[in-house]
Amino acid sequence: MGTSGGFAITAADISNAPHTASHFALRILRRELRSNIEGFALRESIAAGDDHWESELVASHYRLSKIEKSKPAAARLPQWEAAHREVHQKLLAACNMPLLLQFCGTLHDLSDRYRR
Picture 1 (cartoon, one colour):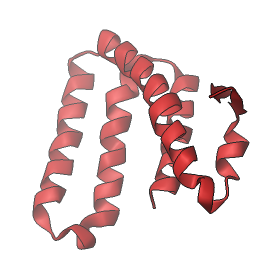
Picture 2 (tube, one colour):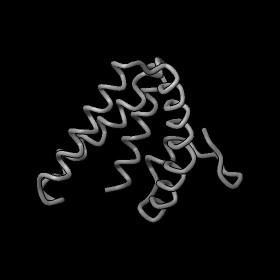
Picture 3 (cartoon, helix red, strand yellow):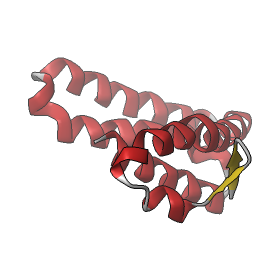
Picture 4 (cartoon, one colour):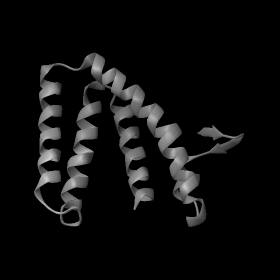
């Protein structure tokens, strides 16, 4: 549970937010929760990352770059979203904290839901 302006905010609050509150929920999700949690996971991943982790990250970024250059934006959206998610997963993969990675995935899913 996080707080913003004195109000307690839970995952259920974010998931059940009415459309009028979705911008507020997204802002909290991105700025507060996701950036802090993913930032921590990224720092841990960089500290623990090895050559294999780095090569996997570079390869996933290369695939994303190829997709971005290949087709008009609308035609490539499903491929781009999958490749973009993979880059984020690879960035965090070396943090060696499965529960943290699972939570980051959940936050990414919620952020995706409100982006659409």
